[in-house]
Amino acid sequence: MREELWEAPVQSGDRSTARLAAKGRDLKFAEDVSIGDQRLPYVQIRGEFPLKFLDSVTVKDGPEKETKLIETKVGAIIQHACFPAPLPIMGVRHGKFTQDYPPVFFYRLNNGWQFERVVH
Image (tube, rainbow, N blue to C red; front, side, top):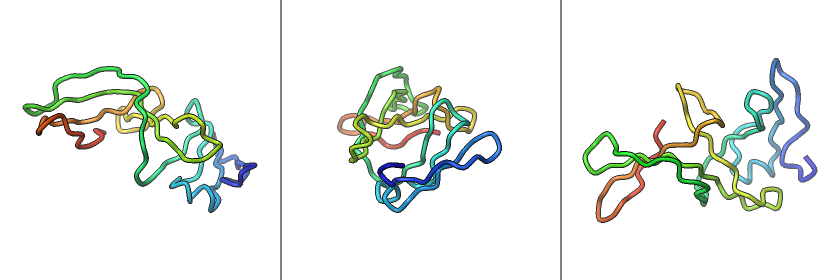
């Protein structure tokens, strides 16, 4: 709030929401900050971001020939003094985003291993 990225949180049921300000949207934050329905506050981001791999969890064969699924903790690097460390990206379990599981990345062998998409 001090940096005017979002407003003070407002309680709505079992969670709070902090409305994004223009400076927050300029950082490619796409929706208001949610507080209370996960362990930590979170916000959706849109666009291209540099990523930092934080920890490799598992690598297994993919569903097609010459593919791999890599489940790994990864963070988005946000170019702002408020975020000195990469913000962790949530994974999806049972159709819902969760902070308890890392995302899964789909790679295909094509003149080297090439990233194709995040699996949901």
